[in-house]
Image 1 (spheres, rainbow, N blue to C red):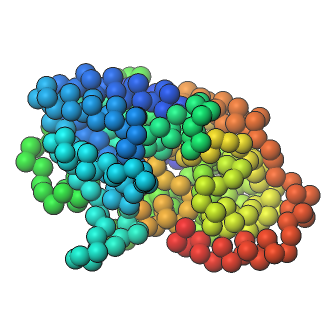
Image 2: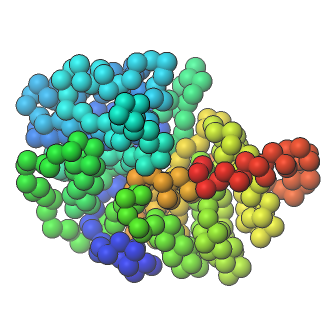
Image 3: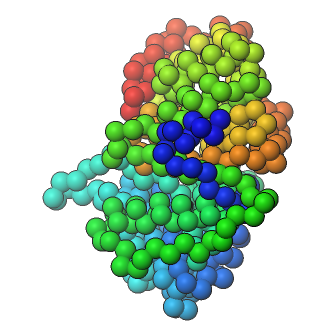
Length: 382
């Protein structure tokens, strides 16, 4: 299975000393803030959304405190994602006002015209001192505090903390985006700080994908690894609108007797995606693929497990926007312990979910079917 990723990326495996799964902002944010508080040299932070709210302000104060200690702090926020904090003022103004090194990824402006709805940086990366890294699906803001029932926009999600040589790869990814967004080359030479792997290393590989290259690395990786599955393919994603090659790989796996599960949110936060999704799900149900709908809060988790040793986590959804139009990342993790941890997490969500049945499909009205079909026509851009 590792051969697929090597051929797609041209890279071998990298060792991680540890991989820690962090559920929702309640687990993630204390870990990130502690890492920032302990920083001695440099902090590299990239987020698609950085909300101007109490959680966002907590991060700003921690980053400013690090800067005041002499730590080099660099921050990238996607220019479109920055608008997600409206009606509050955009976070970039506050970051600049506090004197933090900040770059907007693909700025949106009318004069001179630069309106990039696509080519967004959807990656979420925090690297501290080249020794600790965080990545996954979570943005920075109150919305990630999924256990707060007074939070109307709460989102359930996963993030992962890494130590070891994979941290070097995540830092390289940040620096590449920093150069793209800021128009500068890094004046400091890159010096990896991680030691040689121990015998207990967890083998990983970073997969970067973006519209600036001709290769669809994540799409090709998904097709390849699904095609190698022999026991199970379990997928959690908020946006499920795969292309025909991934669809064929999933159906092929099920025909081989593989246990294929799709674990999706019961209602999407983007209505066009929700309707387009309803159009395609009958096809997968017909092929005996299990489809489970999670109750609120909105499930934003992006994770896949194959058999009992492989996991793929990161920022990418299973839709055209992630697989063709955005800058995304995934991390392959070859570790039975994390695979089982994710399996337990997914099983818990399945127990709370409702399973789609053929009888439910029969209740969909003709106007809704027409609406769903029209929405599906836009799927190459959703």
